[in-house]
Image 1 (cartoon, rainbow, N blue to C red):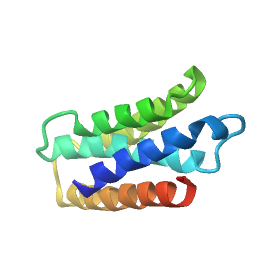
Image 2 (image 1 turned 180 degrees about the vertical axis):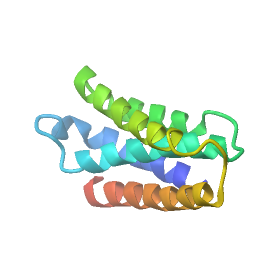
Image 3 (image 1 turned 30 degrees about the horizontal axis):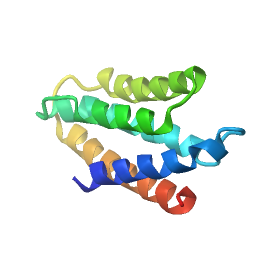
Length: 123
């Protein structure tokens, strides 16, 4: 729950500062793309391990809505989300202890990314 709230707060903060950052690549662009990849990984792994639904895809949609990227940048976000999803889709077909450990690591990384982006680059 904290991670989802942090993502939403991050999205709102970034949306508020997006206009000034679009002229040149924002300093947090790489972190946003990594966050998209983390969300894709979580979407696959959490569903694999029993969480039915599109919660993590929904978080990605909120990030896209907050950023309102141009078509090229939007494609980059989506490509990173899909890369995260496919990286585990190719490895795990069953929920294993290793998969649950990966979920834990990605949850922590996602929280750290959202805190860093909002805290460092937000208003």
